[in-house]
Image 1 (tube, rainbow, N blue to C red):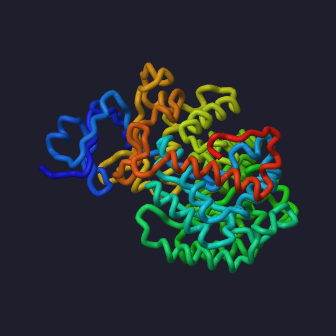
Image 2: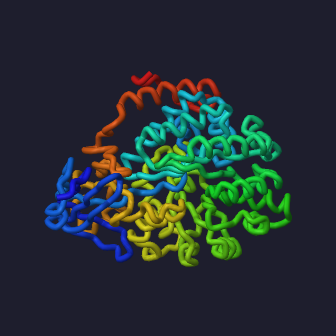
Amino acid sequence: MPSVDLLITHATVVTQNEGRDVITDGAMAIQGGRIVALGKTDEVASHYSARQTISVENQIVFPGLVNTHTHLFQVATKGLGEDMPVQGWVEAVTAPTATHVTPDEMYIFCLTGCLELIHSGVTTLADMSYMAHSYELHEQNIQAIMDSGLRGIYTTIISDFGEEYGVLPGLIKPIEWFIDVYERLMQQYKVCERLSIGIAIGAPWTVTDEGIHRVIKLADKSRARLFMHINENELDNILSQKRYRKNIVPYLDEVGFLRPDLLAIHCVVTDDEDIRLYQKNDVKISYNPVSNMYLGSGIAPIIRMAQSGLTIGLGVDGAGSNNSQDMIETLKVAALLQKVSAKDASVVDAQQVLDWATLGGAKALGLENEIGSLEVGKRADFFVLSANSAKVVPIHDPVATLVYSAGEENVVMTVANGKILMKDRRIQHLDEQDILRKCQVAASGLAERCGSSLRLKRKWVTSWE
């Protein structure tokens, strides 16, 4: 019999294939990081021998979740910016953190964020760093993603403008500086199997007209995907009216920034004209419900966008505007927020939310041929959900259980590219407790150094310090 690296047996497999088939007592054979066989356990197990066989009887296998937006380094800022609107939060907490963080700190914060993503079934992420005052910060951020075992797209925010609008001077550099950094990153990481480089603009009012045209030119030359926070709140349109006498989405369409390889992040303040322009240009959307609620930004009209045919992915956003990297939590909130906005419980169902978190996220990142569903030929990216707590028992519908009942504690195994990253809820290739201890010490020191800890009214010393 052919030998494979890994054989998963006796699972309920939620394939997310075109027919949304669910295989009971199913099995997957994995070789070289890809699924080579998928079907009933008796059929698959009789045709393959394996170097490792894992039975997951009475457990559910899902495709790995795709986190379309985060800022991993913001793990350092959990709890420092609570109860603040987005602009004040950026100026008081996240921007000072970004300008003071060291490469060693960057690595440990980003790795800690990846650990929580693994615990919540994520196998792919799109990370948006802030301006790095040394190139080594980029390298350490990327190294953390690579060491975690996750699949990723790395970007760093371009800001060549915006001091008059509150962008800290330490985050602003000439556009040529950013282009040079991106060209260097693209050259250095062009052969990475699990990581690619995208191009990000933090917000449309943080870039000059020349800057946005240079970004478009670089994207055309490199074929890199574009990322931008768009209309997270009313500010984008207010400042666009001041600069261009039109709202920001029509302006972006006019200059050619709207395109099929653009991921528009947040889109909370979105009107019918914006949706029409997104649809015309096949722009992809990243829906970040928890951070939108946490910052009081509002509710993105995701159902209207989905009904127009736009591709929707889900994002946890940075831990600074979420306080976690828990993708399982995001699934439930994504559904409930749309239901309460519409005052209609039927406006979105569990299957649609799972589609956003898997197939939609994969397409939003240009990876739909590689991930997003469990099918022969695709990457072996998946997680296992266990009925190991009263929170999920009884299970009648596995998809509804995942979206509405499950928590991180129910994710017992996560596999990316055929490699087991977590098994029995234990990270397999990293010392998680040591990483968490280092993260606590580093975050406390950084908060003191950049002044963000001054916002804390409560004072205590933890056993970690």
